[in-house]
Length: 392
Image (cartoon, rainbow, N blue to C red):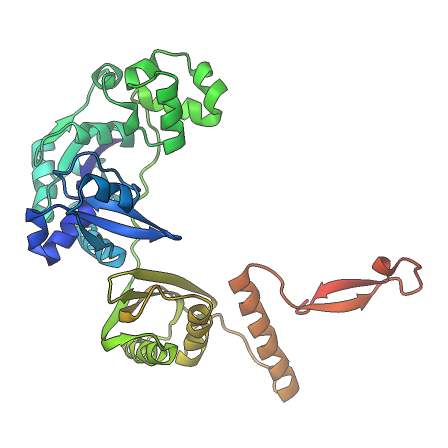
């Protein structure tokens, strides 16, 4: 399938520049925290010698006046999602799995648009003018990605015919493989796609395993990776800003309860529950925290949702005093009908089993067991009893 690739270079930095226009005029880097290390996520386009995942201390050694902005990933995905929504009005086949990287299937669009020029013009019309874009058209994801990287801003590039000969001089760093594999390619002196394509496929497979065959195909301009269009899914979002940064979980729970109440008001009389909910917080230093909470059966009351959220937040540590927090519901569903027993004792037992199943679903396996006799007469202690999951 022919595909159109749209790249938005320095997307996180551009998003931050939308909120703070002054960043455009001074060197800046968007950073994130991984464990105890602070790394670079993105940076001003004019800065040379920086790269993604570079330690911030190393970046400051090159640019000591560098402004540091902590990444607001939730904000970036919201802006990116709005772009994808707009593009889906132009084409139903839109994939946006990575920030700043979009693939659009061109199958069937010839009945809507006269040619590639008209198609590109329609897609550009759906995107904000303040984001620089590069576009490329080719048969397959990777060839269209390469075509986009070689295009001028605002223009598009097309690869047709013998793609291998057109991409042979491009760097192997453009390959969509692990950084470890790229380093290994450079160690072998394979710096360009042409040098990789000139080798037999078996040689690369001998050194890289199954990934070697994939590398060889990409270097020859072949990519049969399917397009994964976004699934249409109803989303409900709520967020709030606290009067002052808070470290107390009770304050956060009160804000969460208020937001969940507003969500249930929007779901009133629809008879559906929440199957998946994402909670996020942002500190006064713009540090971001996010957790996804899943429910085995759609939750239809505030109490059960708050109970799960409390468990998640008590077992996690916030990166700092929380200033903003929000909830995003991305999974809605109907409850499975089940008739309860008229006996109070059995109903209580059913509720206990439901709690056990929910616990196992959250932790990924059986957690409570019952001791059952197997061979109590055995001289071997391990053969006398066995542990059986409690809800079986």
